[in-house]
Image (cartoon, rainbow, N blue to C red):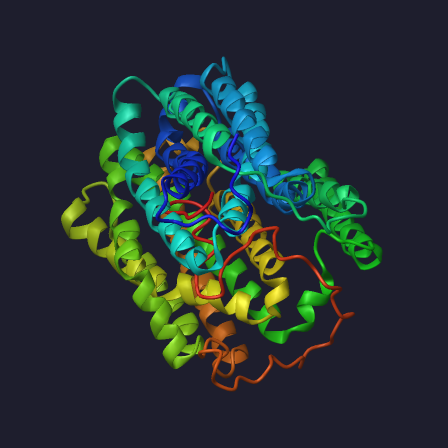
Length: 513
């Protein structure tokens, strides 16, 4: 067991490099899983005889438990030890991955994916929390930067690796891949990562809030998914129940002494606005990444490997240019990047309308994903930095966690609703003409969401909250109805530096999914 004291470890030491390796490998498990499963969906559906709704739940059951429990997972790490909870998450994730690989039918696969999401909610906040807790303050920014960059490499190879495995030994190997990764993470973490916790953490966990959030998301997701088969009484009951549970969640959070979601954060007009932008753009991203690989395989006849490679330019562009985009946002303010970025993404999505039965990757697909990647590069880093700058530094961790959960909830709802809105249901995802028609409708919806996100930023984002801290910066004003002031919170739930991005796309290229 490592003996280095919290907050004293240097990045240049051998132990520092081992700690960085453990956190990168741990988060890479979740990142790889997020990128390879999309590529495998058509093959999973054919092998297990799954309907489109079942394939949607293959993604959404994971996102549901991850989004609903990720803030609670961070709080558990603060209280009981970040290293301990991180290791529990890694083991949990690995066991669930083995269950996914062995699933005899789609029902077992969906259930195992939900269990896998619980493991992700435990390990994802822990990977960054350990970096923040154990490294010397002078090395924290560099450590987080290396974590982000090396994690981006995992996101970049995910589609290629997933396509190769699906084309080769089979889709079950995309889950078995997690087992050797987990073994390596456990060995390195046990040997080299010191334990850390928030000694001031006390009080009760907001278990009721977490449960209500997960149930509300689950009920609404079920209603949106089942709506593709028709608006039955079950759909209406589920939808209304989800809304009522959501209202109950808000009521509980208002009264909880230590709420999972401190509503006082939304007294900042800027924080509220940027999270609305997040909901719009990440819903669009998730819809594109979900349906594009289906379109390429079913309609255009691409192999899983080529379909996976189609998304790689987005990740490459983000790896190469995100730091520059972050500096640009700091220099000129976030309004322009948060407005122009979604509009450029929308242009890329509209270019995807050229993808069809006789599409060429070089002439039709590559230009579209390149334009979308440029827009995402311009948008993502300033978006996250603005979320953190919209609140006091002591609230940075929980603000990042809220934005992270918002991105995943947006992806969850988009994957549930888009096929129904586009007219795709049942076994129609195996019919090229039906997929092609639905894909074009869905891309128009996604482009509209992106334009909406850009317009929200244009109207609501003011000033330059990203300016260097030695320059005077006006505090974000509360021009909308304000809630109660948020109580002091420990930022250790999902610790980040003010300058560094904390979240990435909810699906596809991702920093921590």
